Length: 120
Image (cartoon, rainbow, N blue to C red; front, top):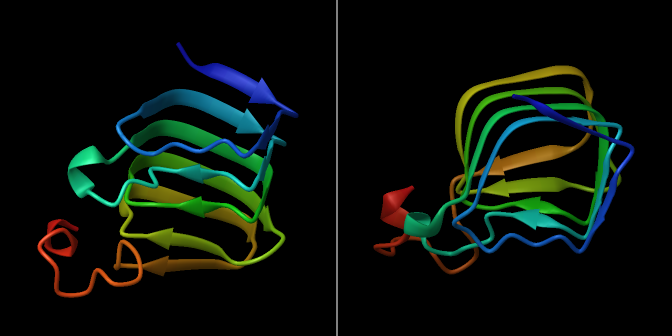
């Protein structure tokens, strides 16, 4: 059963890893100073599965080393640069107008050539 969340504002909502977010529709939601899967160890990755984001907005937020699969992003406003670090994407569709979004393979600064980074 899919749960729909509309017009919700998430402020300083931090996920340090190990969570599963699935079967969600997030419509016109705002994410302010928030982050998903901010763990520095890929063994602690959070999973985002079967999720739709429609016309959402992010500001000062980030996406860490999550596994993001079967996700549709339909319109995403970014007030600044949204960074995805060490994120694994499977069957993700970006549709409509998408703001500034950077995908990087490093989990974070200082992890180049480390055993943890090798897990990504």
